[in-house]
Length: 436
Image (cartoon, rainbow, N blue to C red; front, side, top):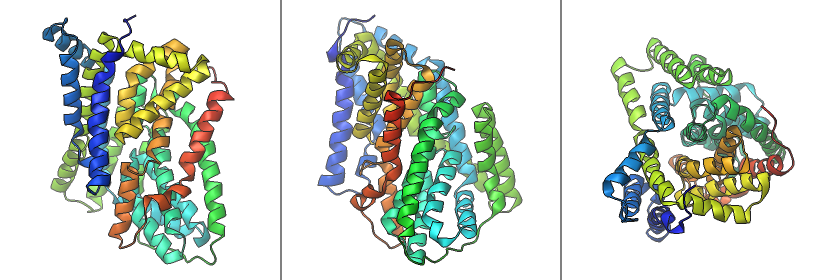
């Protein structure tokens, strides 16, 4: 046990002040679009690490480098980075055409009055298969705007339904960076975390779908939406989804998706071989910042742990939250607070991981349960904050369709995050964890 030292948490505070302070200034004072995402998060973490290195002058700099190296040597960090790269390549290969085909295929066979419900269900499927909520929102929101314009459904309802479905898959997908971060950080199998998570997410999704249908039925005589689609482009998504559910190794699943997607895209003439390679490269490089964040957070947390910062934070949590249920709620609020501060649920999970792992040991919480709580609560907060990437991307996608909607118009229709919070609290306090 390290000696409790609250001052060791200073690097986290410095990071939050830099990131949150600049983000609020850029977004709301200077009016810069996507202000939070114009801040170089890697630089903010480097400053925080510098502060951690300056602390505790009784320890030599060489010893601090040794501690940071030990933090990076964790096999979970290496595994996480490799999966990030493979997931990025998969998304680069399959592109947006497959996701659009999924959406337009389902819209073509379902009555018009169910169009908004279809948007929600399709977003759930696409985000679970692709592993990215932002990617799903950027792909499906233009379709949602077209559905609203063609059918007469409320634009905020259509957009919010897409956002809710996107967060469903972000929470559950085997190749989502949040799932990868939570499972590797807590040391559990993805299929175990999926089973634990699914029990919480499914009731929330069903409740959200019912409310969406009720809202839809108030609309009179909506018109159908018809658009071209290609069924064969759906195959890589379906293979990845089925492979993940079957419990196949995530690397194998991603390789199957990459290989099948490459064959289909080349065979159908949808892409030239050189373009395919370029898309693979851009998909992998798109994960660079996320990978660097994982590395820097591991180094920073190694120093904080050695200084006694985690023990200080755990002491504070022990005083407020009692028992196993209280520990689970404390864990959820911890990652939620990190997400509010960073506006990035993956970063929030990566930051909360080391502390949550110690909390899980302290309160007797299984690794699959702690991974599920981290992922679920990060998605609850990320899916609702007005300055999150999901909300900003949705608003931008609508603007590209020459239409307008505001975050505060969308918020009342974000049914899925609301029900996910309720479902999470029920499973924490009323329904005990099942024995594995």
